[in-house]
Length: 403
Image (cartoon, rainbow, N blue to C red; front, side, top):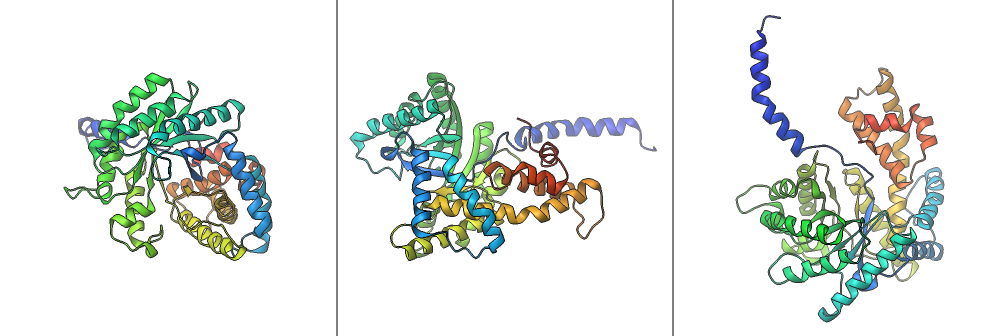
């Protein structure tokens, strides 16, 4: 070596604060699985046994209207549909959000009672072991006219959950990073008052949340202001589209304006432990069979499109949407397995092949396989057989923290 040790030491000294700041701001993937969806249910419609009733309604829609024709290869369809039925029977809802905001249609003088009843229903399901794996609440925004009402709703709902529960609070219509900063002490106080652990989601429904008045990407500032409490950014398809003046007939999660916002959401959360979440479609699979199948095709196409773009979670608003949520999701992961397994095996065995994968790509390949396992699209035995590796090794390759 020709360079003196002092040069290396000075380089370390100057960059040590940069290293520490980067690790603090970008800690990597969060522990635990990411749900494939969030089901929004109005507070006045939340009753004990909600998840099971949604699963039963989805199965009834499937039985009444027949499986959706999504153009799947028959062999793939034969693998997917039995798994979808099993999922709808066992764990139809992966993430529940009690909605006391736009989805809630009750009169103002009923909101307290409806929120208390919803919390009691969720608490009953938690005690019975029938609640979805994750639960939470969306209250009204921090804008002046709804601020106190929103915080009161959170106080009532979280106070109705058993101590020790982990719940997610969804903050809608964020317009300024200062709202995020001001909200954190409120969440601290709610945790202390009720003995619950509170995660935070921000809903991206306004142009101001994407691009600040100073010309910077406000999303990034909000993500880092929220810190480790933040679990995700959720896209609000219709509020955001309407705020840009997009005609109602063209408001959709696949609109180019929506794609721009979601692209920036993905960049803002990358490496932070939070995730970017797609929005919803308001075209519901109800009515006559042709109408149901048309809505299923639309929903499945949007789910598949989001998955292809790295958005692994979206909103569902109706039980029958679970049919295409899981059909499209399971088909995506099962179709991805053979190629991903082959490339992972070649990478881990250091075998030269037609594709030269780097560590980052191997991490993404493992991530797809692990997500397929999380939601029930894949099984451990078939993954181990396809890759020649135990799941624990794939988790290490995928950068997934243990536990």
